[in-house]
Length: 314
Image (cartoon, rainbow, N blue to C red; front, side, top):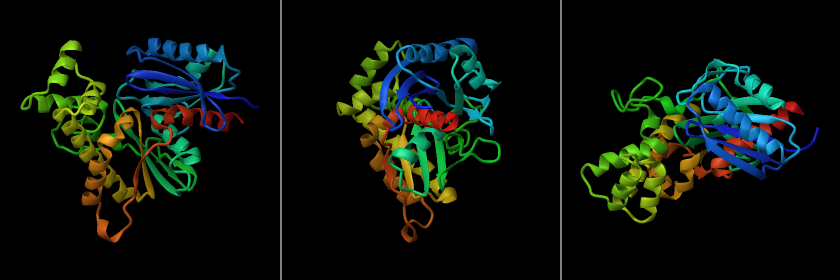
């Protein structure tokens, strides 16, 4: 079979879908919000797939899901920011759209895109970290995605870095993603605003009805706001710590940073690199892996999901 596939990135905030060619080129794409209720979410995902399939001769669909996917990649076992619990999501979507549907963890998909065609293409062991609503990781070893015994490895975002820290949607407290994610960026900015004035963030907070977003913080940082820049520096330092912990265990050749927050990588990667070099065990006596932006940016999960779908359906 030939022809492009659709990759769908199902995140806690948005559903993003793209028609992707064999070379990783995004041909067309759609985006919508992620409904909280399970049936509504499935209808929304099916809707963007059907819309794209009506305009392109696609042969399969890959779902990149922000949650625990079973070892046989047929079910979503648990998703902190989504409604599914032990649900056969791929089959449910396939029944709605009339196309073969395969599924994997969203950052596994991103890691596969970067391994096959992206920033980690020459690496034997590569770690991809995606920073969005939460934070996730994917590991490729010798050309194979490493999933662990039950399909849930490596779960970097829910390492508890601060005992009794910020509450997390997973049920724990102090998880890394509560300090290093788009939502964490806004939370950190709000904490900093308690002691330091920020006119652009105050205006964004008022315009948002009392809600601040990571995008608000990014815009303020681009304008030179000190509070926003400090929030990004904090995010970078937490990222460096998390990557150092992962590198102590996994020893990757390269660490690729993707996800929506990676669009602002220039605002936090230097701080992350400095923290990584300070925290990595034996950093002066080993190779410190480079931290690099993803080639496919925040489209990596969509691209990888489509590539995985093409590979599995043949």
